[in-house]
Length: 486
Image (cartoon, rainbow, N blue to C red; front, side):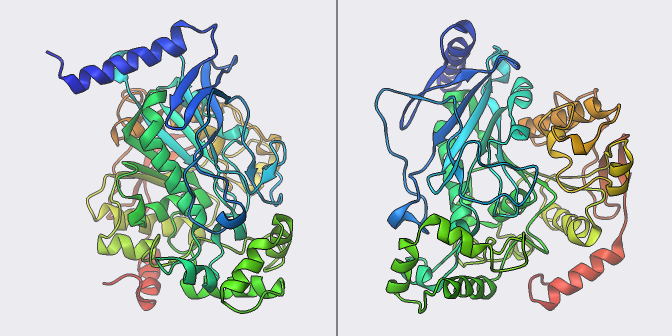
């Protein structure tokens, strides 16, 4: 006899599959907690996508530099074929163009991809992958084409990508903001946006065929720093069950101390001729145009470099990521963490291995990787497996979207393997489960004694990379700053 709860899940799954599978001629519709959405079926992949879904109210006017508020309800059917506005930013990276959809402070939107192919009831509801984009916390958006969730959805996942506030809009830690906060905390509005999006997933993802009890957060660079921050944040407890960190963990870089963040924010206000730390100063800052704030933020540091980051504020982030892991005061979940071979060991490799050591010591299943794919042309052989090179392949795209990435004969294999491993991990917390079982080499569970990892590149194979001197040096530095206790 089928238990009532399971029967309800299977019935809901069957209804959903019928909605987007049996009636392909009709536009796909889903009703969530704020209203009814009408998505589209992508003709190339056969995957249903809902774009531009508001997950929070526009953070404009008096809501600038406040935690995200609830999105408004709507009546009738809301079209969900186009991306929402991207968060206001400039364009520091040639491979990220945010202006096609427009930039605005009104930018708290997410996108959902879900397979329109009926799947066996035993695989429903489906695991959920929530992608947090990179871009130095001052650029990027969830709707980039290289973040297209279609191929992953075809493999059995529901994929969510999101926008979050960037730069000064997302991470200003001015003391006047702390003074008005009931938590005496400032900054981290971008992290609070991510948390609000994960709360939206918990409330609504079942309507898209997703399983809210199998949510994997994943991100690259600033997205990886964000994932590390969410692991360390008590406000994200219970909102995800697994995590994937690509080229960034929040250890060693990517997160500011409260003092540093406060000093940066005061310099920012001074550059706008806003002085003092009282409510009048804050009112003046909130009255400035978005363009004025953006322009001022770009002159705080070296040209083209971000100035604002997540901050250890005592509320969203009570302590640094390494300290949270070392003390056990973190959201301990199975993780995949890794880097690209030529990003630099001090910047990425050693901190990522330290993260793996700390979280695996807490009993979490941990899997480490090194991405080593390099384009065949001479320019790519010179720069190697560079920062962000893996993104295309994680999303199951057999060829990089940027011509500058070059190509190799094994690119389709790398894309198929990475997307299989990622979906398997989202499904069960183990990258060796279906759909990878028997198809790809077995990925060893991380062990600090050997630094066991999986190399993904010309060969897909287990490796060991013992670098005790690097560990000892990094741990000594961390202990000297009081961030890891022996």
